[in-house]
Length: 373
Image (cartoon, rainbow, N blue to C red; front, side, top):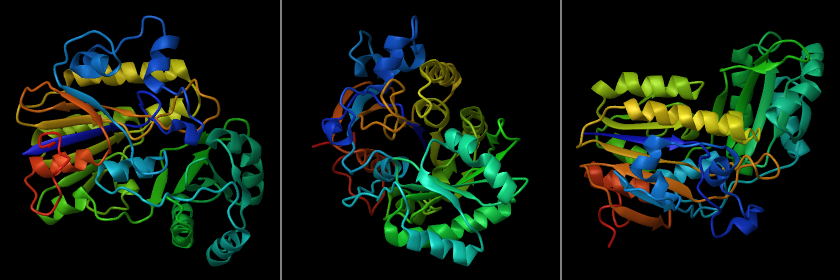
């Protein structure tokens, strides 16, 4: 018995009903990519049901629908936790500037002095402060519209092990603040040509109980691919394959799947990290097409469960560089069925469906795709 839960990071399919509360009225990641990219198509996804999700003609080969996030927020951690069954009544906290008392406490324990402490794009902050960091050795502290504390450091100036140790200290100090993630952002290169490396590591708050933990407790393997283990702070993850790109993630899935049993939970991050935040419509479209071509070659059995969805939107045509509060597409392949799943009122319906599929004894099932009464 095996299932693949595949999150296409930020691939939203239209503004959620509460998008106005987030400044995201009119956002539509997929719709605007189609509009701005002449001749664009995703034949594999469209054939499975994406065309129907987007209101286009076609006969779906998989079950299809949309999901709305019930938790407050539009960040990676909130979206993934809700997919795994943990809805947040109290959102993570965001900061434009972290409190001086917290920053000073981290500095004192770690023996460092930060520069920065403001919201910035990860590439812009290196342009602004990278040279000063290299000259002084002071790590760069910054944030974004998400609930994140990000710490950047040059690998040749501030070794990776030291950066990770610093982020572990920061994580402890951020827990009382309810900051969702502390992210290590290593980079290399020279002034004017700095480049972030694949050594990124996320330190998340410990999640509430999720279906991942329930699966692991009943003896099922839960294998995280990409940043899944980081997002859940390792909770409920029995094995992990970190990856630095979509290509690495797809290769890992393809390599591991033939002998896998249990749940494989994968995140493909390039859509969001490389193209959504950078408002790169052409790059986003190309990345989607690459995934679509790979999906056409992915081999699975009729009794496998394959769920493809997303965690939030990141419309590359929307003002700013933040995520967008959107509904997300839902494609489900199992047993050759192709039925409409409607618009789900919570991402947590995925967790309920996994509980049904693996016949868990200790997880609510009332919102499963298959037992929706």
